[in-house]
Amino acid sequence: MDAEPSHAAGAADDRRPAGPSLPAKLEDPGLKESAAEWLAVRVELFRLEARDAAKTAAKRGAVAGFLAGMAVFAWALLMAGLVGWISAGTGLAWYWAAIIVAGGHAAAATAAGFWLSRSGTPVFEATRSELEKDRQWLEDLRRRIKS
Image 1: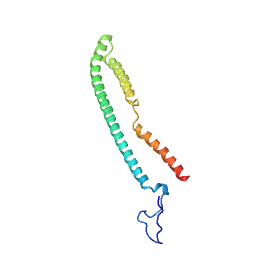
Image 2: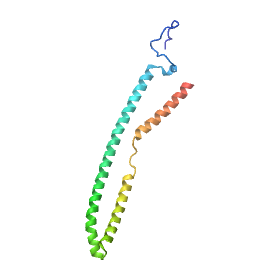
Image 3: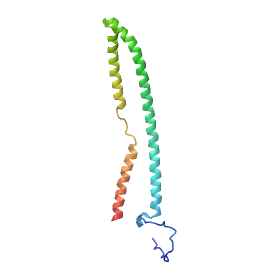
Image 4: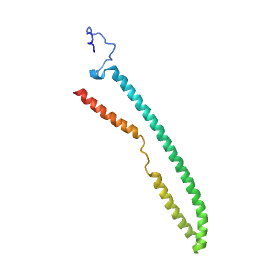
């Protein structure tokens, strides 16, 4: 690096903004360009993972809607058919047969709800990993600058 020429008192340096200056190691234009490129890459990674997360959420939502529709349809058919069959086969009153069938469907719906709430692939896994690496890199950089 060449030494900077001295300036007369009161002369403005066009290359540096007024105000507190960064340590000499951080004023390197290459570092600023690298930081800008790093930020652009991180934003792109976030955008890609957000798109993937949206697709996954849409698929899960479609499956949940389908499951709900099928559960209602099955409930209606089974209530009509099984209540009559159980009532005729066992001699129970139709309302007791309906309660038994409804209990079975409630158990099936609960099992489906547990299946839906089961955690899948973590969202933004790569971004979290990269941000942790960046945090460690920045801590190392701060230590080196203070030294």
